[in-house]
Image (cartoon, rainbow, N blue to C red; front, side, top):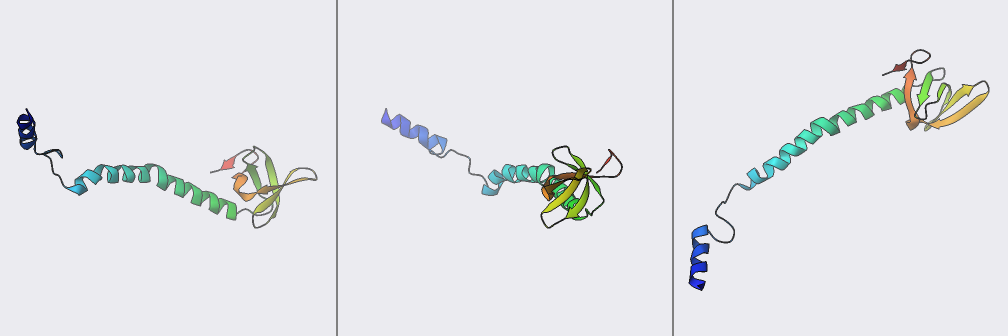
Length: 112
């Protein structure tokens, strides 16, 4: 009976199996999947972040802005990491630049 099992391995090409392929071909699906993720997810996100950074750097006093919290206001001061926004008469709020979502072109129209 042991002789029968040995013969079965000999005919099957050994415990590793009979197929010995190119190692690059086994990595090809991973490479294609990474390329698809890059072009569909990573690259558009990088473009969006770059556009947001340019918008933030172009803000000057007098611009009307919208914050991530939904607060509309007029920029009264710009610092390195924060922007001061007047949201009502004599009511000023200091907001991190990262929380500015849009610069308004009119009263309620966001510039995209």
